[in-house]
Image (spheres, rainbow, N blue to C red):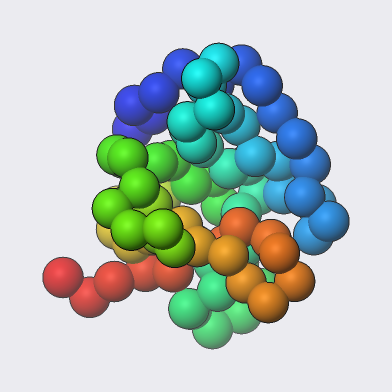
Amino acid sequence: MQKYYANHSKQQPDGAIVWRAWQGTLACITDCRIESLVGDMRRKVYATGEADTFFSVPAVTKIGRKRVRGYITGDDNGNLVFRHTYY
């Protein structure tokens, strides 16, 4: 599922690790919080493309055996989180 090579990492205040490519492109987030689902789920989230707006990056993760599509965005505390979409 990973599209971009990740070689630079930085830990967020909530404990998730943000991986970026050498040019700064977001590649993936390890232990990313899934904000729009019930419970405190954390998964590895992969960026699937470039940022389509200033606030969101298209992304995908796996829950069980299913791929869940959504986007990566920031929360009120400045952490990057994943929100799923229904399409």
